[in-house]
Image 1 (cartoon, rainbow, N blue to C red):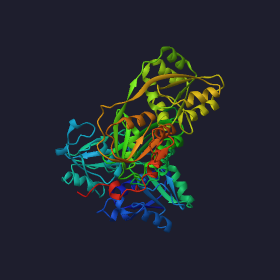
Image 2 (spheres, rainbow, N blue to C red):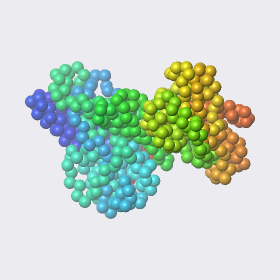
Image 3 (cartoon, rainbow, N blue to C red):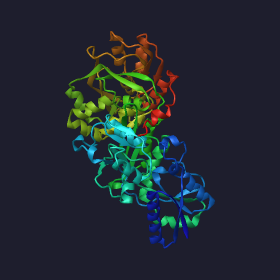
Image 4 (spheres, helix red, strand yellow):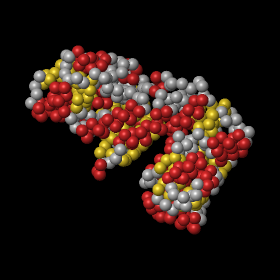
Length: 553
C-alpha cells in the first residue's frame, strides 16, 4: 500500500488521483490518498509573495513525509522550491501537459480587435503572480491588475460574477479539472509573450530519499525527457537566486536532431518592461548559463528609485536601458547622438567577406554588416567569428553565427584572443565604426595577423535632439562619441555622477576634464550594475510593494 498525501483543493486531489491511477496501472500497486491542509490553502487574504513562507503549498506535505504518515506527495512542480531538502527527493516527474498560461475573459470585457490580449481598455485582471502581471503590463499599460486568491474553481467564479474582468490561469489546471467555463472566453497567451513559470504543466512526486521501495515503484511513471527539460528551467531559476515570486518565465523543449530550445523572459520595472531570450543548442546547462549570466545581477531591483540618464544613438536604449529598468532604475535615453551609415569600400568588403575570420567589437557593426549584402550573411556563416562583449556576441548569435567571445573588454582583449586562436599571417575581417579603437589593429598586427578594417558607420552629435526631462542621479556614458555629445550639449541636466562604460570612454572623460565616478570595464550588465551601485550608495533592495504591486480588488 502506497499512501499519497494531497492538498485539499480540487485540483490537487485531481492531480494526485491521476498519478495514483497511473502508478496502479503500471505497477499494480495499491494506493490510498490522505488529505492535508497547507499554509497556502489556509491564508487566502494575502498575496502569495506576502505570506513569507517558502513553499507555502508544500511544507506540511514534506513534514508528513518525514514523519512517515505518507510515502509520497504529488505537487505542481512550479510550486516546489528549487533547492530540494536533503532527506527528500523527486521520485518521478510524469509526462508533462500544456505548460502555457491562458486568460479567462468575461464576455463584457472581451475585445477581439485588441490583438494578442483581447481585453477592453482598462480591464481589471486578476493575478497573484508577479510574472504574469508584469508580462501583461509590459504589453498593455492600460490594464489594471488586482490580486486574486483561491483555488481554480473559486477564481473562475470570481470572474464569472464580475469581481474581475479577466484572470490568468495555468492551462494545465483548467484542463485537468475539466471545468464548465460557460460563456467565459478562454484565450491562450503565446509563449513568446509570456513564457510559463519554471516547471509549469509538470507534476512532481516527492518521497523520502531513503525509501528505496517507493522510489522503485515511482520509476515506472517517470518521464526522463520531461524531467530533463523542467530541470533546466529550475536550474535557471536557481542560478538567478529566485523563488516562486521571481518574475521569470522559461520553457525548455526538445527539438529535432538532439537540440533543445530555451525560451525565457524576465519582467520588471515601472512601467514594466521585458527582457527576452531564445536560445537553441545541444547543451542545456550551457543554454541556462548563457541566459542567467546577464540577468542575475538585476534580481532584487538593486537600483530601485535611482534615475539614470543614458546617451544612446537615436535615443534607443535597447537591452541596456530595459535591463537597468528591470534592476529598478528610472531610465531616460536621450538621442544626443545618431549613427550615419557609410557606403562600404567595395575592395575592402570583398576582402572581409573572403577572410577566414571576422572580428567585431560592437553589436551595431554586426547588425550593419549582416544587413549589407547576401555575401555578408554567407561570410558570417562560413568564417570563424570573434567578439568582445556580451551584446556583440548576442548580435552575432542572432545573425546565425557562433562567436568565440574574448575575456576582458576593448580591442586589445579581442586581439589577444585572435592571436591565441589563429595562425600567424591569417587575415581578419573587421567591420567597424569609422572612429574605431586602435587597440585591435595595433595588437593584432604585432601578433602577425593581418586585419582588414571595413568602416560601416559613424556616430555624430545631434544638437537638434530634445533635451533631457530633468536632473538625474547618474549619466551613463557608453562611448567616446557620447562623451563629446555630452560636452557639446548647451543645456545639460544636473547630474550627481558620471559613469563610463569601457576604458576608452573613461579615458575620453578624463581627457575632457570630467570626473569618472565609476567605470564598468565592459558593457556587460554585471559590471554596469556594479559600477552604478558604487556611486549610488543609497540604492538597496526594493520594498516588497515595488516587487509585488497588485492591490486587493
